[in-house]
Length: 436
Image (cartoon, rainbow, N blue to C red; front, top):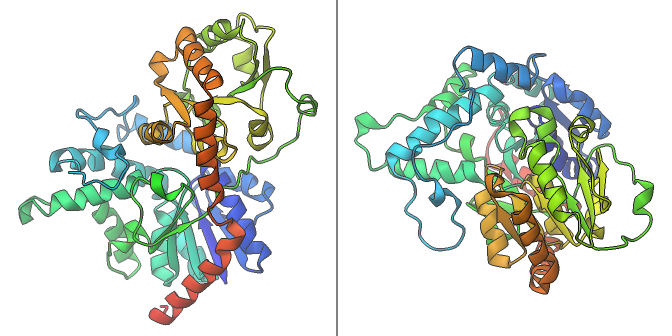
């Protein structure tokens, strides 16, 4: 079968797709990865065949232009209400956000983001899909253009989840609240976005465009935020791009090794930086007399701004996460999908400096399993980080909790084992509905 992966031009959204793409390719299926020109070298470096869709404009250029045109705020978008309800995990009933709050989120966050990330890709993606005729389209959870293209050519369509599914939860909250409103007061801007593209290509809107026919989820089932009715489980398999094992990792650590890393996203956009250089320096100073081996990943330009580096600290521009994590006693990170899932997979206690959009839910996962702790970026002072790190290293319950979570993660089917399930799913889809 022909399988098309679709993602916007962001490395950390593409990297988790690679093991499944290679599993399908190794099983004899044809695989293509469609993204904007900015990501093509990253795709081909992974040994996959890329398809260029959308303009040459980079994501950063598009964000800056949209901000200058007044269609996107220049600062962070902060809702004027509590969003705690969005992050609840468990089987209990949740009320959901009220109509005024959920429509605010869709009008100010969800739909503007959808337009920003997808509008430039749709036409090229549909043109390629009509030419290549994929049987299955697998989309990054915020790359909605893939759903439109799948619908146009009648391909099966699934959403790839490497983090908690806030998008589906918000959509369900929206539809629940919408039913309680008078007919004349039910605007649905996300539906309008999908319907506009569907009508352009001779189709009609269906809610399946938003949700996909199924989802592939790497989180163990008890910790999924809002599972799709048809969810396939898959083990998270790390992929870091070009990786080389540094010589200092040949030997075991002389003291408990702690990795502090804030991912690669902040290197692409300054707005995504979790902590200032001054905060990092404060943490280094506070940990300087601890009997640990601290490994800090930091770009060279940021390293040059540090006043001093303690003797127990090693700074590296980049270290393959899946290589260093198994040697660690704790990991301090910002909550990105690669860091969170990678730490979970290796059974290492983690300190989450919770800046990622779904970080509140990840904090709940760590609390439920006692696999780690979390702190907000504003509270991540040197003394506070030291206090929490000493808890992680000194209390064996955190290691035990992390290892329990690891076992649940390892119980998930590997990408290779998932291939046959996807083959059956696509075969059933072909039988159930004719293709255009």
